[in-house]
Image (cartoon, rainbow, N blue to C red):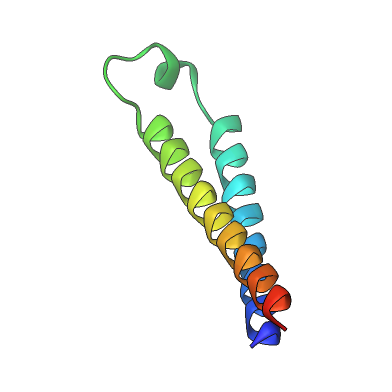
Length: 75
């Protein structure tokens, strides 16, 4: 069970890193029109989507670490 949880943690961390890098790339591609336009920009919406994905992956990784610690404590 711990092996499965360890692999799941690694996958969650990789997902968080990928979402972070994609968000940074989208941020770097933000144009002057995106910043000074009216309403939410496409770039801003994509950045928020990547931030939410990163937070979800990080939360999953933390929960999995807690599960591993609980399993190790019970052994």
